[in-house]
Image (cartoon, helix red, strand yellow):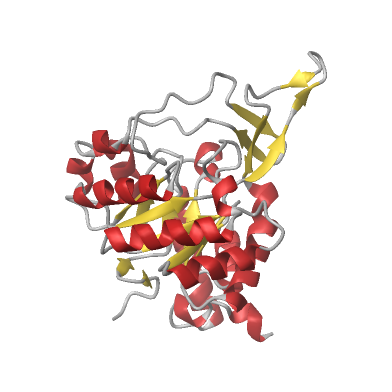
Length: 304
């Protein structure tokens, strides 16, 4: 009997559609191993660049009434230092996707090459971080620059290239189409929404960086809308991300057109058992509604 939750992104085969989103528990091999053993179909590392980066001073995270606001500043040990962490992950069947960033197309290509050399099953281009200058959303809102980055990375590696998009643009479908035209294998939508919080007592922004990225339940309707719009604009797989906390959220993204799902902030408010609860919920939903597998419901909302 075939697995009703199995899904595929280019050559990347997943036993179920859930993934650990970049930026949460993605620093070490052991923590990501725990996530896989808890039911995730894949894991995405913390975003890594060529050189070590310290990140911003505290405070870097603020809890709001509807999610988390963070401006970490892409702290990471540098891509080469992750080789040892892969020793734990290479033993597992679930793929490890490397989230990478760079300060130029050449940077992206070099980081991608190293990521694949040390075991990446795919790379996810972080062109959507809303709070670091000269990288992230500043790159991801420029279709021409994004295309150059995707082409250079594609020419450097033979693994799937996923482009994680920012919602902080006028038309996200224009950016998605540029990524597809340049050769991207899949789109991930969305990264966090640019936001800020101000302390009435001190009369100052709370985050040391002033601006941050909002994640969690507040951005789910934004993410679902973006996936829905992108589904009509491109022919490559879409990974839904943003505010997924339970199986109902996951099904909503699948109906909008996503074929896989990334979960991040929910881990902070629940724990890593969220992956099993989401996949169990999707399975029960398919059985209850009489669907054979998740392929039957991907993009179904477009037919209504």
